[in-house]
Length: 301
Length: 299
Image 1 (cartoon, each protein chain N blue to C red):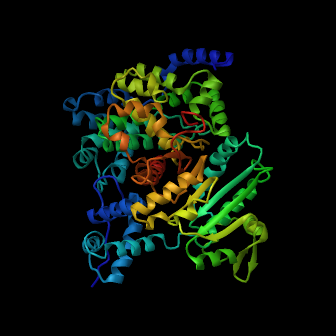
Image 2: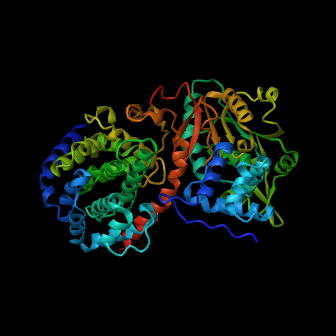
Image 3: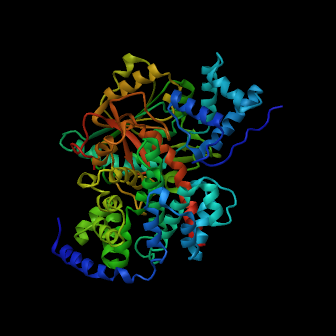
């Protein structure tokens, strides 16, 4: 239930969101990169992407570090962005560029949610979305990756715009072992889904990405017909029940096939009803180690 | 000469050696135990031991031993023995135990809150040399002053192997199986016996050991009213039909709110449709399919 305090926090959020344009740390490259990568593949210009990335040296260095990780195809000694495109393929470079771009808009303040933890969760979710999409023959794995990466955009908004209030919500979630969005709703009167939607709209993301940001905890409310929000809901749950959580343990039991996302996703994938969730869960162990070491390595860059 | 098998480390794409992936799939299909990509090196090492023993020079030929040759079933058992060797220790699967304590126990307590008798029964099925049931006993004793206050708790421990059971009842353990014990557990539940540790009377209380063949249908019928069953790395040796029978017994043995825990990376996929996989923090378990405690969406 939304409290009076929550309502006033929500008003504060709306007021402060006007200031989002002034967030200084949003790399200039990210918005145009995002817009460019959302185009149909045949319209994407490799040179333009590498040019955009090259504008930001630290971003370019992070991209190269990721390009050398097994998570993105185990390319050996990729020395340049151009070489990364050649050896990894364009989709992986897009994934990497977006991942690093997202990393750079996180506040460096660690007192609330450690940016390393947040980033591990987002990257983990992106990888699991891609993996799951491939396993169940669900649409475009690259789009699934992007959806997983962006789904918690609202947490970044909350960290920037209402850090004190968000911290209180996170502390409640951690202390009680409950989902973060439930604690946000209780303490702030809104969740990262709503604040994320505002930023996603402001950035003019594709409608299905705005939907993912807005509905990944409630895919039954999704207006989008691609099923992406449902896919992200399940991948996000798998992350939160594993070592790719938000830095605390959610003390609960999840039955994936009872989640609304499962029923929705069944419409898009015939493989889902007999899907081996146990095996998928075990397979994800491989990602965890790599995600932890990669994110920590990048943060030292 | 037998050459050491090699592996292109890691996972994702490109895939590791196809023979190794095939062996992983054979093991998963036959035994239900899965090796994620980051554990393939371990699997390769275990295959290497068997190859050395059999003087087989290549992974491809060893793969044939597991899939084509008439002795493939025996070889699979030999490989499984290599895989599970040294698996037994106290507090072996900490995330599973944490999930049992912090999520499952409160749910069981809640489900039984309306009953006049407060009794909790946990079964360690295939308890081997006793590390698992003693671990469970200690865990329940630690909760006796908190969420299990005023509850009678009981651990049943069964195994087919009499030598293992004798070891379990003696309760004396070396440094390898006690390596995960914290100083608090050591001092509270063990006494020193030269360079070994012996389980004390407190940890032995309300724990019963008995010999049981999980394929013995008549005796399995009597293992009633369980709140939780732990059966870790035991079913991997059963063929599909036997496994199905044992799992059906477990289903019947468990109370409606009951939980079945398997070993790390062990799955019931393709074995039983009545149990439902649930995700707990850092672990998975199986619950009875026709209901959930929250009456719908799990919490």
